[in-house]
Length: 359
Figure (cartoon, rainbow, N blue to C red):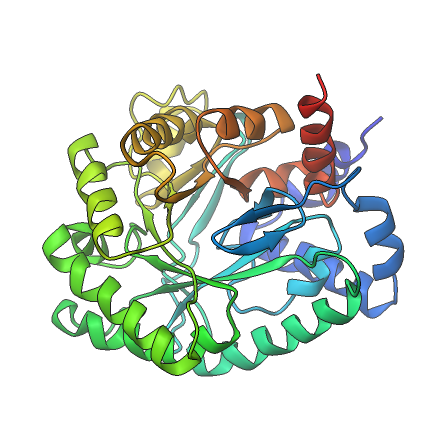
């Protein structure tokens, strides 16, 4: 019998969500500091060999943690101990920034959803890069002789940087982070940085993606897999335009999708007045699932096997992850359900995927 839902209700449900997040993350990192990592890895390791090659990288499983949970690369090895096949950190910006004023994170418990307007709060690329480098070394030691979890780095625009200077800002983040990242994701789809989503327009996106590709190759001397993360609120024609651009520029994949600014048509059961009281922000979790799957299927039908597709949005169970894989995803990510399902959620999903593959 699972005890975490009761634990969540008693310990976290009444608490400010951002404070609860920090305390939960502290608990995860404390387990590692107490030397429990090897025990956790034995408990959470995938059943059988579920490793897969995507974008030239070897992943121990197809299921990973989406960007947003570990914005500053402060707990990558501890999160890997819990069974995630990859951990995508960030969003990281070229300059450190505090993010938006609090409160900026809100739970919709009945919907297993979250609204956030965090605003890319992070310590900046120069501070985060050494942490990623250290985490890679730790994973290499922890997983010696086995396929280690992969580290993705999600980069975004610094809020104070004007849109016309976005290319230089993304280039500066790339310069710091590409050498230590297994793969890079360009985030132009968060709703919480003013004007950011305007950069999804092909004419604005092209120079950013080209600059990140060029800079990452220059500073690493290797091909760092590069993806772009898109919003679920794009019209299908715009989704296809971004896909065409990604193929034109030789990107490796697309992450679909980010959070949504929509509130209508999502089947929310939380009182609309409560939802409205939380204000602006991106909604994630179960209500986003249907639209994320639509975007995924649209992309798969258009790009075939020419791009890797990473599905994220509303994934709660192994069945959800399996549906995304059946719809064309190469990898699947989750985040919001982690808050509601507890520390062994990733291991349950990965083991469930193994079971589904044998049915």
